[in-house]
Length: 110
Ligand SMILES: [Zn+2]
Image (cartoon, rainbow, N blue to C red; front, side, top):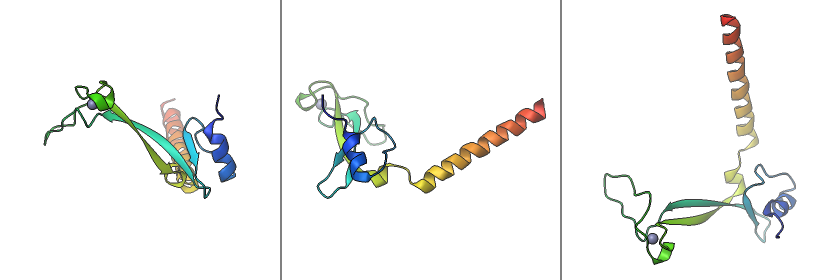
């Protein structure tokens, strides 16, 4: 079994990654890339008509192995993928405010 990729990523970053289920690549210069896999209709055998939503699935061809769907992996620099400290703080605030509103509502109806 190969070493989970977040281990190398955390070593390069000197901190924990936010999601250890993801796959990471550490570049030669120490930059950490998050590998995100996106599944979509195969462009080789699906069609998009103007004014219509793209097909969910193609009819199947050589390039997608007759599944009609293709998976592509995108490398996104970790600093663009993860939430910044500010964003995380804002989310915490929002959750706290929502909890406070719920609590107040509950008290009013008690
Ligand atoms: Zn195809």
